[in-house]
Image (cartoon, rainbow, N blue to C red; front, side):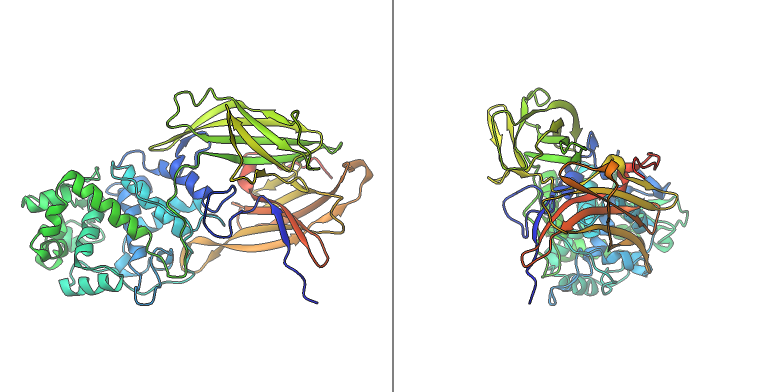
Length: 528
């Protein structure tokens, strides 16, 4: 007899496909990365660019913003419109040994972005975030970012034009990637507002092989603006691909190919800004035909932020975490009355089931800010879901409530991660309502792979063992323990799950934890 698919009860992703926002959702982590850049809850990826001209790990002559934008374009350049394949799929990870991808900026970009890479945010999605930051940190427009890109597992075809190639070769390569002549001019113009040509990579173009020397594309290379086009039509360009050695004047050949019509349209500040916002938003949306991207990500008005339960010996539950509220347009975002109206594990809700939060701190993005309200409560009868009341307004997560199961709970304080041995020790509790469940520690392990500086995320799992020590008894729960040795000292992600047996199995899980929560914590377990 075929076994039925397990019903899911967890803090896993609520949406099988993109639609109306319901927490938790596939866009949550990428939304956090692009919109909450500093302060409390910061993702921190954009902090690599404090000023547009920052050199970062590339050192003298480098420009982080330009490297991030270049990396994203070079990844997109593998797209084949006829096949619906390639595009922004992170195949560039496996293509850095090619002459068309010369320079250390690519691997430096990958290392900058790696902290945001997870089972919920692909490296391809991180490249879209990189392009977003490259423009906004330099004063450019905000690209329309979507989530859902898939990572390639091998190199794509060659596709990046070389400055010494003819105009017709450039046209052919852009046409293969689905761009016509006008779109080619727009994309190159938008890509060359910041950065330049590095001397050690292209000494025949720059005339200077010093690693610290860069021949910049325009006179304002630390600002994302229209000078790349204005300088060109004014015959005052410093762009080495427009005024350098004749054989490598690819920008000159392309910009002038329509009698300067497109580059002239892009010579005004607003014309440049509007065209580049549209052109580069479409660039990061260039994905294989079997990939479904989310709607454009906007700041989420309200969502829980890393909620965590802990079960005590008497069966009561501690609830800790935060509620994040988008308060950019609120005058007193740090003075709100924020309450949680919860339903207990038995499905009961009463006027007494209220958790009063306390204001904690603020996080900032380039265009937005968020206020965080702290949750600290002990719930004698557990929890199954909650709504959030802010003043007189109630947020009910699309009518579903914010689901918060306590059937399976990861016991954070009793667990630990030892970087020296790369070993995670996990304790979890499982409700005795679940009869003879399979209790598993599910992990994503970072494992090195050939041809890429960024490791693969590999699924793995180990069965947790039930602990029958009477001195560790927890009312209404069974205690389980397990260990997992990661490949690197960076550890990875993990989930504690329990699946019931029978014709209609049910899976409950406390999901998406990271070993980084134990940074700086000595690995001494409270249990034996």
